[in-house]
Structures are given as C-alpha cells and as structure tokens.
Length: 314
Image (cartoon, rainbow, N blue to C red; front, side, top):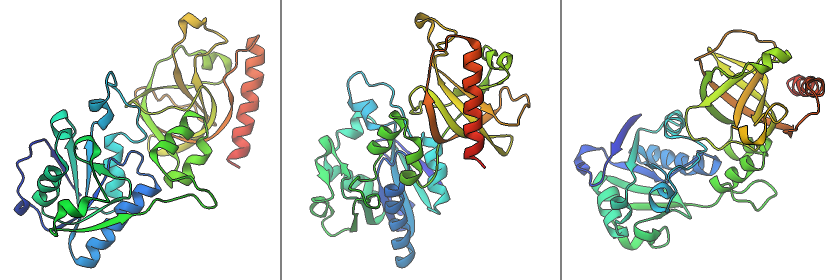
C-alpha cells in the first residue's frame, strides 16, 4: 500500500494516480462499519479493474475545530490505522493534514480538489459522512457537487444483531469509558488494543509477589475506567495472558499523590522486559479499583483476580 501525506493546498495532479475508487472517512477504530465501507470500495475497484484508495485525516478534526481541545483520546492512532487499512489490501492511503484552512473549504472545493483532483472515479462513504465547511457537504447532496464526474456508493449503517445500536466510534468510546471491554470485539471485529513501552515503576508489585510491567502509553489512547481487567500482552513476538490494573494504587497513595498508571501482571512469566514495546489486548473487566485496609487483604484479592483470569483463559 502506498501511503501519501497530503498538505493543503496539495500539489498533486489527477494524472499522478491511476483511476481510483476511494473510501472517505476519519475511520477512528476501523470498526466493522468502517470495514464495510473500505471493503465496499475494494470490491468495486476489483469489479471495475481500478485501484482502491482510502482518504483519512490527521489530526482529529475536533483538535483543530473545537476550542481548548488540544488532545483527543483515540481508539486507533494513525500508525495503527495505517496498519489495519493495509491489512485490508488497499492500494493507496491518502492522509490529509487537517488544518483550519482545509476545514474552511466549501463542499464544491473539496470535491473538485480532493476527489476529482486526485483522479477518483468512484466515491464510497458511510451514510453519515460529511465534508466541507461546517460539514455542509454530505452524502445526500454529493451528486450535485459531483456533476456526473464520478460514481457514488453510500454504505448504510451497520447495526449489531438483534439491537438498534449503530456500530460507531461514539459507541466504542462509550463502551471503553464504561469498562465494557468485552463488548468491543463485537464492534471492532477484534479485541481493543493499546501499545506502549515498559518503564520503571515503584516495583511494589514485585514485593507483593505480583511483578507488574508499568506501561507508558505511546499515544493518547482511550483507557477504560480504573479497575482490574483480563488482558493479553504481546512482548518479544509472543502473546502472554495476564491482568491489567488501571488506577491510582489507593491502598498506598494519598489522593494528592494520585497519578494514573497502567500495570500488567503476566501469568507464568518473569522475564526482564524494561524498555520493550508491548501491545495490551483487553478482554474483560473483573472489578473496580479498591482501597484495601491492609496489604494482606490486597494480596488475597489479587490472588482471586489471578484465578479469575486463569479460568477465563482455560
């Protein structure tokens, strides 16, 4: 897959590319609804003997458009999004640098410069995709702006079986924020993942008999609420079963010392993995974070958590 970073105004000409079938969207999460849009573009490209393409945007539009909104927690940072789109067999990925100037394009200007101007012969997008200043361009009026220069396919919303919920980034964010990590596989088509580097912590887990890997996140991921979770962790080319504690260690810390940490205890694993890049895959939530009256009570609870995880992975 060829990845192109596009700054506005871009200097590409449509002759720079073969005729394209392009899927449009921000695609945070590359969830099943997004996959349906991208796969539709790929299928049409194959049927028409054209090349497939995806256009996405970076950073998240709300970072640019919302006041005092400098960081947006993500389901899939750009590097993960690229990897997932590539795995779907797409030929071209256009990553448009989202700026205030780009956001001020009128719908007709966006269509002329970023669809027709890049040699796109067929556009595919979800029913709720918007473009142009104030989102005035949408999939209901795109034919007016296309003026017969390209074909259009609108992909309907995808809902969960026996439910009215639309598969969406908003629903996924809600599930993560509520700790419903077990529901994410039905929305994403895979387990939710975060990645980071193992850094030195306070080594208290080791003293308690539960050595943990303290994860410094590589990107501003959305984290589930404080608590204990069943996870797997990928380190040194292998997956290992484990537990993840997200929280402030209230048994040992006063509220004014609270700093949120993400710590993973791996079952049957004791290697030294500081500075290693790891991926954490979220499976289920066991319990809320608690403040224990004694270290002994904490250890008893951790042993119970471990048994729950072992039973889960049986």
